[in-house]
Figure 1 (cartoon, helix red, strand yellow):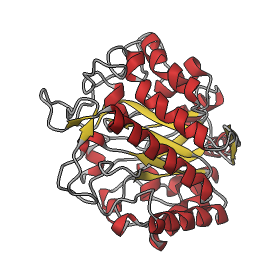
Figure 2: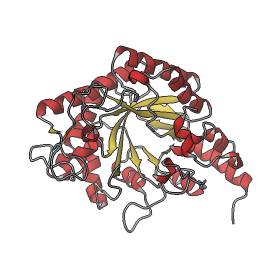
Figure 3: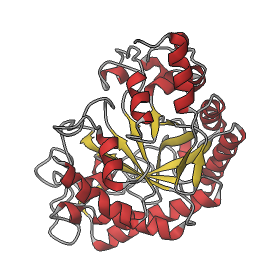
Figure 4: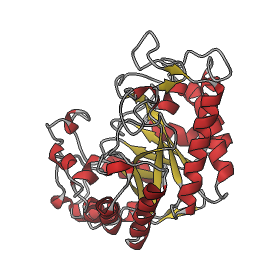
Amino acid sequence: MTATPAESASRAADVLSRPVALGGLTVPNRIAMAPMTRAFSPGGIPGADVASYYARRAAAGVGLIITEGTYVGHESAGQSDAIPRFHGEEQLAGWAKVAEEVHAAGGTIVPQLWHIGMVREQGQPPFADAPAVGPSGLRIGATEPTGKAMTQRDVDDVIGAFAEAAAAAERIGFDGVELHGAHGYLIDQFLWEGTNRRTDAYGGSAVARTKFAAEIAAAVRETVSPEFPVIFRFSQWKQEVYRARLAETPEELEAVLAPLAAAGVDAFHASTRRYWLPEFDGSDLNLAGWTKKLTGKPVITVGSVGLDGDFIKGFTGEGSPLRGIDDLLDRLESEEYDMVAVGRALLQDPQWAAKVLAGRFDELKPFDAAALSTLS
């Protein structure tokens, strides 16, 4: 029997309103804000507008804010002076105000710590002379190096930068951290054989390619308090290679995830373009579902929640129509995963969580790429 609108609304409120533990953090409900680069932080400093942007969504019922990617303190970490940094006195003071406002609005918040690696174009700010670095100096899709293959000194410096950023996050009042290991950026460049051609301990087998990520997780875990959660975001797909895969089978995926869990990762954030698609043949589980089954850790799913249409076209002007979330609720109720991160739908409508939790589905708005031009 098809549920009535009232029954669907009641079920959404019940399922999504349940608290969940990520390490030592209790998140008040199952809704997270997915990290989305906005580039509204001149000098890498998040201002009052950035704080209000996140606080509006927390006040409307988002339980966990995962900030946009923010550069760790390594000269090659980024390539924009408008994207926030998680190092420097002014930058951290700005982030402290963001955390304060989100907490005042009733939410919890973690920064996403980020190093873009070989995605960097040399000559770009904030440190124009810094080289692009990666496991083998290879950009995605390239056959010859165009950047610097990282030395052990470089590896150690980047690991230290992530640990320092995590310590700063705890010091200035954040509730945890997320390590950006997805979408073809530096950590993912080590994980993926397409960009990691190393022959030392950081290259070769899937387990060896996980060594860099695991050492970052371990260094962060050692730097912060035991109850301070460390979340690891990963993906199969890359920004320029949507069919790329770290793992073709559950066994191969376990080889990647197990060292990370052992290194101290408290929760995983499994990034897919469409959450409803199964990850491997022979099972309906998506990437988040397999991650929870293999690790036993709490897992956040993400990928076009509340929206339909092509993921990339949605960001380039074509928009995205609405899509129901009944299947999402089914999977949450069956404990396939623990939280759902909402991206474009929440970018379009700061009140998305409040409307869904109150059953006001008729008030939801389709995504329009014009939302990218403001911090509404």
